[in-house]
Image (cartoon, rainbow, N blue to C red; front, side):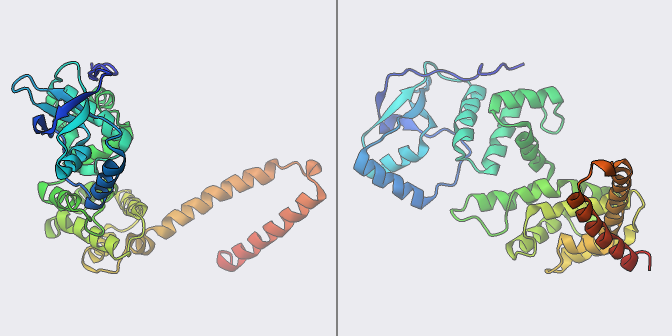
Length: 332
């Protein structure tokens, strides 16, 4: 078991001026997108104020080169400015690959510079370095990953879900993240939110998956997100509510399958539409029954003698409206 901070190699407080030609980027750093406008702002800052924060590097025994752990944007800006030396903190020793990744996770998790897929790629490498199988992780493995990466359990599970999709699906999001301006609607959170519905569709509606691949379903979600047919990612959870109802036999599976197919092929159909036309009423009735039972218990337990005139008057008004509505909609 990896203990907390065991993989964090210390660096000297002394700041060294390292010749830029001796510095190399870190091959284990998955970050591929550097926004040009942000680099331009950094260049202006360096020109006016100098390099305020030293980079962090380690010296590679093999060739004496200094490898970046933190500060690639500063390094790239200095290259453009033809600056000869960069101030740097140097680790007291060369880290092994797992220590290298762990330190970058701790640094970049705080600064939020990595994209979702940059994190997921590094997470996969960490798991491989730990000698684990990404598709067969135990609870103890997840806890160990939390210590190594400083990511929460929630985030770890989110990023691990990405690897349950085929490479052709992952490529859509990975290619978008590499662009300075990601493609509209290509939100990695779609993969997390659609994970459960897709598992349910595979189990409940195998013919639908055979006809329309997972890639096709995800592409439909992306298109609708881009066109604001889907406003928030939470809407995808309505699929799971409808599919769960079908699994329990509370609604007709064939009707739901037909509506999900419409969602896939018709550009203006949203998860809300699928839910409203298949299972919304079912859940509304369940909620009303639950609230009715609670209301019955609350009224039965109410001590009228301890109720003020104003409170009693307000109760009568509210309950009269409720009785009228029940008579109009249910008891007519």
